[in-house]
Image (cartoon, rainbow, N blue to C red; front, side):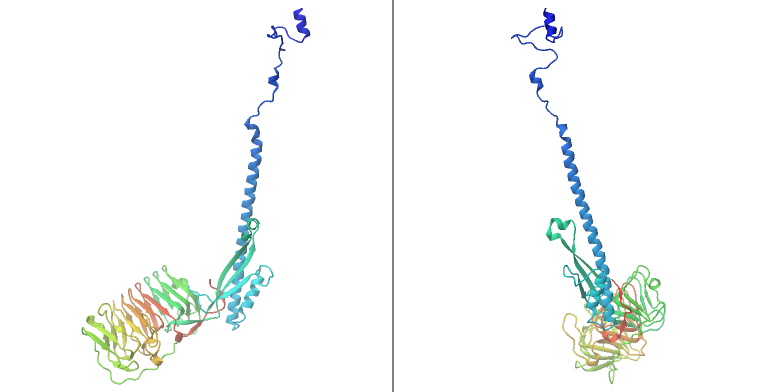
Length: 466
């Protein structure tokens, strides 16, 4: 009875052998109602959502980097185009100046910039082309023209986020020289052989002016042993000179080299008139004052030794004629002479100039700037020239090692050679040099500035130089 009832109720024998207290039977194999509740999901079931977020973030970053790359590439391209436009504008402007159309260079520069994609006449975001005369550096002054091209550039990515970055300005500058004159401040008149020899770490700087060698030799200028030659232009009468063959041993030449130029030949002053020449007053220790009695007067010495035996010598302004040797020794307290402002030394016959080792010379030509300020007295036709060794006088000019000389004016020795020795330092703040040749060695330093009396060099066809 019991087993049959159980079967009729769907129970299996052996699975419900008893009825719980309270009379409620539990069916075997079926969980209670509490077990029907939904199970708790594990944290791993949300991993799909995280993957979506990561993909979105990485995608945005990739788009950002791609946008920045596009902006950078576009700006680089625009800058290269601006450089090309500046190069073309500079050459075009130089050609106009060389042709004598100096008032037309801006119009032509704008036109060639437009041909290179930089239109200055656009109604929106026009380009600009600015022409200037460069100053400073090796390519400066009226012989050169500089062009700067700029244009607002719309970026792609940066401009979408910040209006202040939406426009970028790209500029490029190029310098062109040509068809212009470079004033000469070192004129080397020898017509054959090597007329400029620099060796052993010497330095020659012609600031804002040029050097001309009249020699037709393939070795007219030699720069060796770590020496440095810097000038606005280097003109050679020679057409066979090759820089690689003549600037060697770690040396350098900076400046526009022009070959086949016309010979330089400064305008020379007349010889001063004089009568009796006095004997050399120098040679003994003491304090001396020499020279003419008036700033425009003339005095002649058979020779003149300045600064001998530690003497202190003051040179009055005026005109000095020397028929022997003009000799500057080391002098007292490191000064070969005091004064020396507004002087003109005329060396004639077989006279020559010697500046000893350790001498400190101060010579300022008439109407020229004095060391420390002021202007030297006016000497008329001799203004701007400190020393003039007459044509035909072949005696060499020697400046020994260790000397430090300030010569405010030109040194002209058209028939003689000048030698600058070991460790010498000479400054020509106004004038220049005219000699048959110039030799520098042993670390000598020579600084020369413009002298308009020594001629000029046509710097050839307009071309880019920087």
